Length: 463
Ligand SMILES: NC(=O)c1ccc[n+]([C@@H]2O[C@H](COP(=O)([O-])OP(=O)(O)OC[C@H]3O[C@@H](n4cnc5c(N)ncnc54)[C@H](O)[C@@H]3O)[C@@H](O)[C@H]2O)c1
Image (cartoon, rainbow, N blue to C red):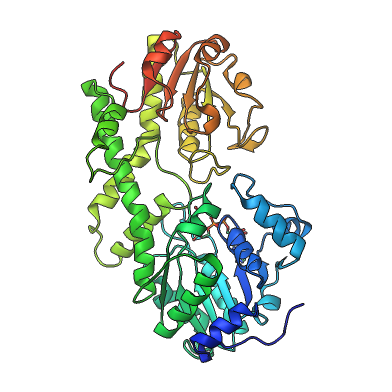
C-alpha cells in the first residue's frame, strides 16, 4: 500500500503541488495520535491520503487499528473514524522509523506539558526530533502542531533535528513549519472546519506549500505568519488572554461576594456593551492548554527578565488560588449548618476541567479534593464522564444519587450538560445535609434556597 520513496515537495511549483494533492499522492505521518493528533490524522486520511499515525502508546495503536476509538466525548468523531477505518486509509504504529521514510510530510502533535515546577517540558518533541535526524533525507516537511513557546522551534527543535554535527541541513534535507493547533476539546471536528490555521516557516516557500495542503484538507482560511515564532505567539496569546480575563472575573467574584453583588447579573448586563467580552468565574483554570500556555510565556520572559509579564504571573496566582476559595465557601456553608468539615463527607460533582469532555488534566477538582482530604474530609466523586473509575486514588460513583446519599455537602465543580436543570428537591432530600457550593453558575441561589439548601456560589453575593 505504501511507497518507499517520498516526494520532495519543496521542488514542486504551485500547480504541481495541486496536481499531487488532487491525485491523492501525498503520504502523511502524524506523530502523537492523542486528542489533537488522531482527529488530524483522520482528516488527512479522509481526504484520501495514505496516513500513518505514530504513538508510543501501543494500546492506543492496537485500539485504533482494531476499529475502536478513543475520544467518545468528541461530537462527529465516530463518523469520520468509522469512514476512515472502513476505507483502510489510516494505519497506526509505534515504530517511527518505518513511517517517516515513506512520508512526504511529518506532523508533530506531541504533548507539551509542564513539570512540577511549572517549567515547560518539551521532552517528547526533542526526543522525536532526535529520531528524525536519522530518518529525514529527502526534503520532507516537518509541521509542528504542538503548542510551544516562541523561538523553541528555531532555537531548539531545528538544531536537534539537524544534529550536533549538522548531519542534516534545514532547508535542504528537511523543512520546518509551525502550524499550531487551536481547536477546543469537545468541539474539535467543528473547529477543524471553521477555525483559520496559522502557518509560519523557516523558509517562506514552505509556508505556501503547507497552506495549499491545509486548504485542501481542512478548507479553512490560512493566516500566513512571517515565521514560526510569530505563529506560536498568536496561539499563546489567544489562550493566555483567556487565562488573564478569567482571573480578572475571578477576582471580581471575590469582591462581589463581599459587596453583595451577583457576578452573573453583572456579566449579563456588561455583555450588552459591544466591546465587552464575557468570561465567567470558576474554581480555577485547568486542562493541558491554558495554564501551560501562561507558563510557556512566563518561561520565555524569564529568559529575558524575571519581572516581565506581571499580569500573566498574577493571573496564574489568582486562578491557582480558586480551589482554596471554594473550600472556604464550603467551610462557611457547613458552619451555617453546624457541621464541621473535619470527618464530613463531601460529594464532588464533576472532575473534568471543562464541561462535556472526559479530561481531568490539571483539573481544579484535583486540588480541591487534595485540600479537603488534608482537612480530614471524606470524598465521594460523581462525574458522568468518569463513572466507576479510579481517579486521584478514589473510585468514582455510578450515579449522582450514590454520591449525594450520606453526604454532608456537595460541590458542583464542572458545568456538564448532565448537571443542568438539577432536581434540587430530590438533591436536597438525598443528602444527609443539604449544603451546596456551586462553582458553575448553573444553580440559581434563590432556587437552592427555596428547596431548603444552604447555598454558596462563586461570585454570588446576593444570598
Ligand atoms: N488538547 C487540547 O485541547 C489541545 C488543543 C490545541 C492544541 N493542543 C496542543 O497539541 C499538542 C498535543 O496535545 P494533545 O492534547 O493531543 O495531547 P495528548 O496527550 O492527547 O496526545 C499526545 C499523544 O502523543 C503520544 N506521545 C507522547 N510521546 C510520544 C513520542 N515520543 N512518540 C510518539 N508519540 C508520543 C502520547 O502517547 C499521546 O497519545 C500539545 O502541544 C497541546 O498543547 C492541545
